[in-house]
Amino acid sequence: MIYFMLIGGLSLLLIGAEIMLKGAIGLADKFNLSKLVIGLTVVAFGTSAPEFVVSLNAVLSGSPGLAIGNLIGSNIANILLVLAIAGLITPIIIQPRSLKEDGYLLLGGTVLFSVIIFFGDITGFTALILISYFVFFISYSFFREKGRVNTTKQQPNSVADEIDSAPNSLVKIILYLIIGFTGLIFGSDLLVTGGVGVARVFGISEAVIGLTIVAFGTSLPELAATAVAAYRKHSDVALGNLVGSNIFNIIGIVGVVSLISPMEVPERIIEIDLWVMLAATLILMPFMIGNKKVFGRTGASLFLLFYIFYIGAVGYGIGDFN
View: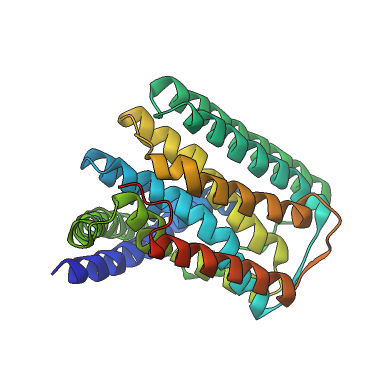
């Protein structure tokens, strides 16, 4: 039964996220927001919606380990798995000028998050620090990109397909939003319940379930968006999706969820998985702020092997202090 809950919850979560994303894009387009703004905010939030709803549900259900494990595991998967698959599909051409600032923002956010959880649980004050950084990230990115668009007199086309497929009537938009949000709520509830059930059956920690099964499932929207962007040669979008999603996860989502309910951080997260996330972020930096021009199949293969090794170690029980 718990396996059906896992599969059913994940399916409902992903379907709900896709429907809600289309509704949100349709609403933004209805109010004549630029493709740039839609891509920077609505699409970025849409791909991170599963992580947010699952983590909030987990914390409110008394499973904070699953919540923080989901978010850190999702960030690890985004870099080592999602980017690797995109790089295997086609080599990603790096444009340092457009990505360097985002790289520094991601690195700064990751270091800030790491320092905070080293001091223990995430409560109201530290949650406000994270939210402040998140607001800075969104504001800075928006005004920076707005300036670039004003300079070039062009609108980016990275989300044109999403806008074209979104509903255009207000009734359909509202219906999409309601159905999508309902799917997210019920899907996350099933996924969290199933994940906790699996943890109890096998006697492993909820954090491990969050780091693996749940993190992989909630990273599927990023995988789809990044793979499509890479296939269409939108390398800036492919990396931009991951940067935005990772900052949403550990800064925006952790901040908001912890403000609602303090988030406990399991010992294994601090001892093992936080360091893996930091390492994954650091090995990405040469491609974002360094001189690397191409993320090719060799690099992608190494990233993927690193992820397989990590998941194998987690599955074998290394660092499970439950």
